[in-house]
Image (cartoon, rainbow, N blue to C red; front, side, top):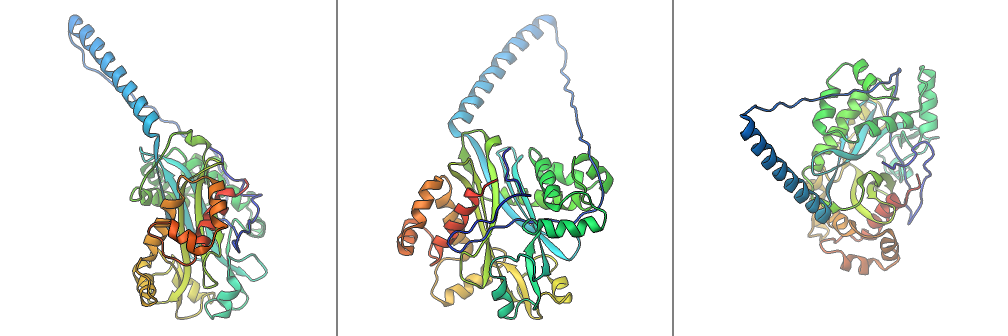
Length: 380
């Protein structure tokens, strides 16, 4: 499967959008791969019956295979996408995992990133300055992606004895997840850290099991989302995730695109904003407040997770469509479009774009489409 090179991925700017990726923290070494084998047995019959049964079974099996091939050719693979937040590594950060699964619930592609409060000399998520200015984040702090800050974060890991950059570790974990089901990942994640590291060749993070678990949760979340058909080779698809400023200065967007290089096959958007502390914050929110990075009375929350609360506030401003439904409508419109079609669309007036996307009412719809486009165009 093609993937972006996380150690060299450039930040992309489009319509005020900035891109990034996440990461975790590390410890020691590893390698190794597991193999499994299964056996099947069949009951015996008389010679005459056996011959007749085998011929009939062979014919039935061939017909079934031909029918399945024809169906696959007509319908293509059924792909779904899901995204979750988790606490894969301690209490100083939160993880975001995105996963695409096929009709057999096998993972086709996965991306993980991790967000931690860093000193303000590092690269923060879009609108970091505004978060400090409005009293949500402490002076001298920025929330940053570990992938975007790979060099800085990996240097600190090296001081603790790690020999592998955080982005490379995440690459290895993502690659290992491909082809597995969520159940298989959870089973492995339940083993000892040493067994997990032995299985995930190239990964050295002590919390590798935690990252596998969050990917498994994202794959489970994907099962609840609509499927799209893709009749090409799924091993040639790339899943890219970026951060963007799609909507003003009070939040930042995370946009995902599964692409074959020409078309956006699947997409996903969510947005994170500082809300009052009675709402649902990202994992480890209490620790961020206790550590002094997020100021009292605030939590950073996903708009999808806080859909009901956020949509109520939108309703007061005259909106009739919930935020999650708006995001879903934009995704449904984008899925199946070519990258060139989306480029053309983002150059049109906002009113024209909104009119063309059934179910979307957000004034910044163009910004969200542009964020997905940026993910689709990401060079890797």
